[in-house]
Length: 239
Image (cartoon, rainbow, N blue to C red; front, side, top):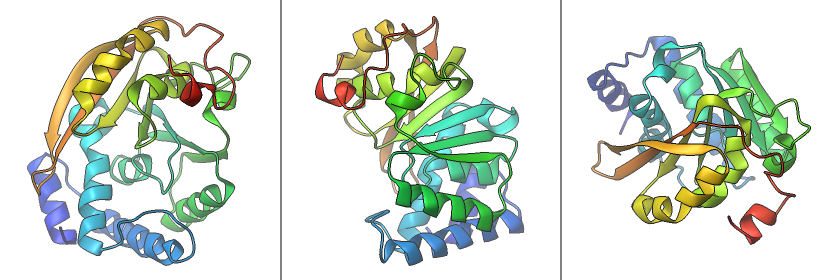
């Protein structure tokens, strides 16, 4: 998927990019590949593959949850790595207010430099662990309209790392592949414990035919104060 095909595929979904936005994506790609030579950000470095499997894939969230396209939502991206999915969403939908957290400082440094180079306003990049940043005394707790994460953890673990950040009636948007149904069946009790309720499963297909499922989990009641547990526990002892 070259840049023109990327823009055309988005137009088919009602999303039009201007020249400045396309240039931002090209700069993002160049910066990603340059830094990836000495920092492990992604295994995918081919231009067309990055535009398909990172940029376009990130934007499928806005097809599944259209409020991202028009409303000034606050979003937290947990364990964002190289900035997916939040930074592609921010480029295309600049009214979003984005907070990115990651536990690895060198990735945070990359993201801060990238945000500055792309001249993105309303983006905060924080070096933090989700278990601490969303803890019971944290001012970040239950402050966000949307939480998301990509390739971070299975859904039962992901819920504990993200739902504490979400306001009541806000949503977790979980990006999943072929194992979505299995993960969802396993995770439903954990999501309920954390105050979440599965509202929708949205199947999307990348232009190359790869299937994706976006699971929309609404926050229907506050997350109990004991969650998230201390760092490492959600992974070692999943709910």
